Amino acid sequence: MSEQAHSTVAVTGVTGALGSRIAARLAERGVPQLLVGRDPDRIPELPGAQRRGPAEYADASAMRTALAGASTLVLVSGRPRGRRLEEHATAVEAGRAVGVERVLYVSLIGAAPTATYRNARDHWLTERFLAGSGVRHTIFRAGIYASTPAALADEDLVVSGPGGSGRAAFVTHDDIADVITAVALDEGSGSEHDGATLEVTGPEAITLQEMVSRIATATGRPYRYVPESVEEAFARRWRQGVSGVQIESWISWYQAIANGDVSAVTDVVPRITGSPATPVERARWWPEPRTTG
View 1 (spheres, rainbow, N blue to C red):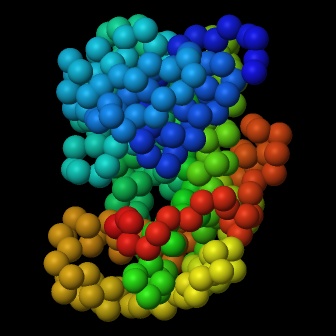
View 2 (view 1 turned 60 degrees about the horizontal axis):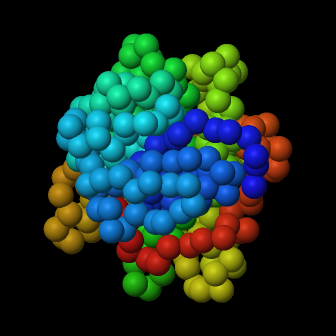
């Protein structure tokens, strides 16, 4: 464990797959932390960490209490409920009111006002807010999670959607957590990462057919990919009683892949961490089917 003295870091989303990994890595390096969540009973117990909450992004008073004492805020994005910008802005302003000096924000690759993927448009709004906020910040545009296709599979381990033959540079949660941890540890006021946008991707861009095949190999389970048209995908989700917002988000995820919007491969993982990006078949965690979207 490092003997270096570190400033306190507040980490949100610590009950989720990404936030929990970031918090664990910071704890291993002796960084004092505030672990922030909506349900304190679910927040992990880690050395040198205080559990803070209940605190939701939209609750300014609760967030000020939860973030008091932190100098850096790792802001793992909230769920897309239609007010993501407002929630994130409230959390950032609450942090600034109690002394937070730097925000590390987990965005999404391809974030833009006209992005195909609905969630990427939401993330762009928060990026714009941070750019004009005056707070030190770094934006991490995470690539498509390697775990997502496995989570989208049905009970028969079939992944169906209109992804076409497009490619994505799927990235593991562990690689994203390693990059964010490395930047969090670079605490100097003149950090080269201040104001930077880092696109965190896997080592290669592959099709959904290839991705699902690799998941099958990695897990030893018969996952398979079945392509659909947009019309077929819409009709199937509508019959399942999925809301319009959810249908748009789900289909637009596949369409972003089909259009090649998330196919860029960057050197961010090896450049920041000193280790190569992890091939998807070597991912250390796969969620059970039907756990997302």
